[in-house]
Image (cartoon, rainbow, N blue to C red; front, side, top):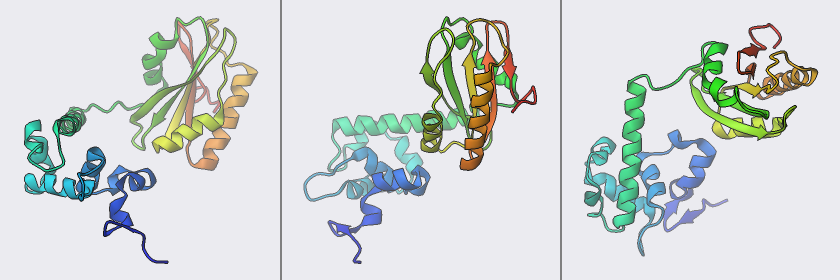
Length: 230
């Protein structure tokens, strides 16, 4: 089958949004990432062509481009005030992220108490149950903390399809389950134990290990991993 093309550009280069979704942002070139931010080019030019010219403005150096003022981006045909501001904001986010990483900004989970410290004020005083998942990178750095459900006094729903669906979308390497007991009783119920077993089995099948399941109360926590019950 012939290669599909758009305006003379191969599909692989012409569809950076689709490539990002399929392969991840790290697979894209600087030009492709800029093209996604630019979105569309003016008549007769693609966003990728505009991105290429924008990068050339800084001698092909993304770092130098990020140090330019927003008005400088408008020197490139196809970039107006709104897109220039959006590009400047994206560059600043990248700069701050790099600074945070250099300062040890990634938060890693080493033990169950690390997770409890993050959730004791969030969940300890609630009068209803909530179920959260901590998604981790391979380094055990926290990738995201997402509330999966919020329920009543005696229970909430934790759907494995939702939990692992988010893990796959985030490209997480592992996860930790967290929920609270408003009663203050840290002991896991029979349904807590069954859910943990089911989640551990599903995680093993998907190569997304469940490292722990914490039950949080106002006065402390129960860790399935620490108790040898995982």
